[in-house]
Length: 93
Length: 307
Image (cartoon, rainbow over all chains, first blue to last red; front, side, top):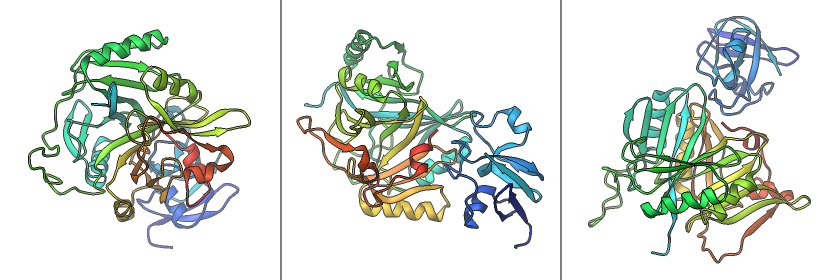
C-alpha cells in the first residue's frame, strides 16, 4: 500500500486501496474491483451512487438530480466524486 | 439548392457542473474554439464550421441537455414550420432574437420525449470559420481531437416513435435506419436525417424522458479516431467504449464523457444518405452488432448511462 492511501471496504464485498486525492471509484477500477457500478465518472449520471457508513471524506461536484442536499447530509454520494480522508466503509445499493 | 427547409443540426446547449473544467475539455481536448463566455455560458465553434457557435455549455447543478437546435434555410421557413407544428398539435414558443448572442429569432417546441428543440434561420458568421477565397484547409492547425464540426445528438426517452413522427411528418426528416423489436413492433432506436448524412438526430428508447445519450463531433478519418483515443488516455478522460464501428450508420467511433458526465462521441465515416434510399432495419436480436459492429455485444453502461 502506498503512503497516504486509505483502505476502502465495501459492505458484503471486497476492499481496495485509494490514495489521498484519488477518487474512490477510479481507485476501485485501478485495483480491478467491481463492487460499485461505473458510469460517467463525472458526477452526472448517478450510476455509482453509494452510502458512506464509516469514515471521513470530501466530495467534488455531483448532480443534485442524483444526490439531493438531504441525501448528501445522510452520507449518500457518487463514488466518482469521493476523496477519502480516512479509511472508509461503503454500502452499495 | 436541393436541400430546403431544415438544413442542418445547428447547436446544442448542455448543462455542466463546473464551467472551467468543461471549457478545458471542449476547447483543449476536443479542440473547439472558445468563442465567448457570458452570463455563466460558454460558446464554442469547431474549426470547420462557418457559423458563430455550435456548442453552448451552461453551468448548473445537474448535467444534461437544455436544448438542441436545427438551422432552416430561410426566415420564412420558421413561420412555415411553426404553422405545421401547431397543426400537428405541438406547442410552439417564438423566442425573439437576442436570447443567444448572434442568433436570430427562434421557434421552440417540445417533443413527447420531453426534449426541447429550437429552429432558427440566422446566425452570425464565425470569425474563425473556414476561408472562402483561395481557401486553405484550415486557418490555424486544429487542436486536440481536431473535431471538424458538431454532428448530431442521440436522445433518450420513452415514446421515441412519437418524437420521431414530428421530425418526419412536420419537419420533413427521413428515417434512415431503425432498430426494431419485430415481436412487438417497438422501435428501440430511430435514426433521422434532414440532409445527406446517415443521421442528424437519433432517438433511443429508455424508461425516462428528457435524457441525452450523447453529443457527437465529426472527425476527418479513422486515423483521427485513434488520435482521439490517444488523447483520452493521455489526459485520463473518462472512456466509455471504442475505438470501434457501428453497424447502424457505419460510423467509426469512440465514446467518452465530459467532466460532468455528459457523453461525447467523436466519429468519422458513415454512409451518404439520399431521400430515395430504402430504410435500413436491424432486428432487436442483432442489437449488439447494430450498435457495436466489432464487439457484437451491447454494454450495460452504453445502454443505461445518460444525463
